[in-house]
Image (cartoon, helix red, strand yellow):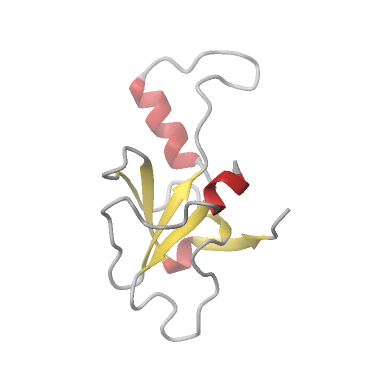
Length: 111
């Protein structure tokens, strides 16, 4: 999943963060739990999407990290705070998370 996302870093979402916001493409949420139970309702699936913490940075707002220098950059795979920000479907049909720069908690090393 990570390598596939790294090949398509161009922002095709039609969403452009402003201020201290960061646009992240979260990892896809599984339709079943680890024990094999199907997540059947839209509400449960939406809750799982907001709980997702790993994703790839797609675009940074102009003032993201303006006071301390960038901690992450476009293409970085990051861990973000669970339930942070908001989910928005992009023009390309993918669900993106728009978070604040302080919601990025770590940068994951490339495999």
